Amino acid sequence: MLQCLVIGSGVSGLATALSLQKAGHTAVVYEAYAVPSDGIGGFLTLAVNGFDALNTLGVKPAAAELGFSTPRMSMYLGSTGRHLIDFEFGGTLPDGTTARTLTRSELYGLLRTEATRRGIKIEYGKRLSAVTERADGVTAVFDDGTSAGGDLLIGADGLRSTVRTLIEPRSPAPRSIPLLNTGGITPAGTLPAGTVDIGPGQMKMIFGKRCFYCYMQDPAGRIWWFANPLQRTREDVSQLDTGELRDWLTGLVAGDKTPMASIISASPDIIRPYSTFDFPSIPRWHRGRMVLVGDAAHAASPSSGQGASMAIEDAVTLGRAVEGIRPDTAGASALRTALTRYEAERRERAEAVVEWGRRSAAPKIRGQFSRVLEDLVLKAVFRSLSRKAAADFDWIYRHHIEWDTRKSAGFQAPVPPGAGAGDVA
Image (cartoon, rainbow, N blue to C red; front, side, top):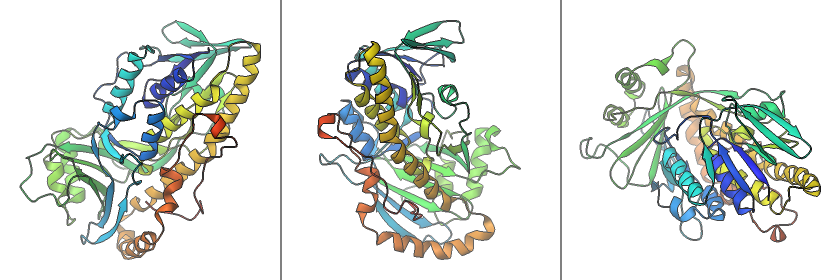
């Protein structure tokens, strides 16, 4: 049984701790912040491949009760209201599970509750400052002066990972995407009847004159929305108060033929805009007794809709890779082999998803002068895309990790057909 030190208690870290326990090992999670992050963060849409991975960890039934089903998306031009295309977002698992939209806090809370129920310890106020490796183990040193020893250290510490710099100091910096992320939830009953033109479960995504945005309705009648304004160096909107931010956003969408301005105006709280990044590739994911999972290894653009799903897939693959390894001399060699196998199984798929997400974000990055021409060609682009078989996206959504390696000998992560084809989704 390995003693595993998991650095970071987000979705990636908690899923990894659950997976390591399934593999027969002991995991302790160390979180830099002093308290749990309940209620913090916006919302996300968890795709069916994420639910498939959660099923392996035994938490899918509970996760499938969170949020609301969002199996469909439609795209429109804001300037004219013209419909571009309808998508089925990832399809449906055999048991009927579809993609679901939920708050990040809900998913985090579920994983934390389940980890605690299963006896996994989470320690807060433990910000990693250094790691010492020996032939027989690894020690994490925290900035409060304490330390912890174990057999394996997992960096689940996100985009600005400390563990990543310890594994490979030459790792590149995260790659900027010139879009901001913001959003909110409009309470039911705050908009006049007939304002919103979609039913529950449909994402309406709009290429607006000055901003890309999306809104959807949950079964209770609340409107969930996000917006991706261009990030401009001459303005810093992150410091605007809620009223100023509301005015700025409604100004960006006011000229479009959609109800978005009314939706924003009726939102009591708006997420403070933040910059977006991705992380396409790093030289290595592991070294010695340290390894990376989730955004620490491969952060994807939010446009991919795959951040949480990919982190959970990492967790399952890592747990499967280290199952049965012992903390002895023979186990040290087996551990190195297992970490190499884990990286080999995940890297190609992860980097393909990151690049796919970046291509998906590209149509949102539209200047005022280029927008008119782009509006003319977007219809043709999406008409061409609608003719593509749904199977073209199976490499993303139909990915399954078989825990029993006897059933998956020679496993290779599927990659997209024509990975450089410039698909937009």
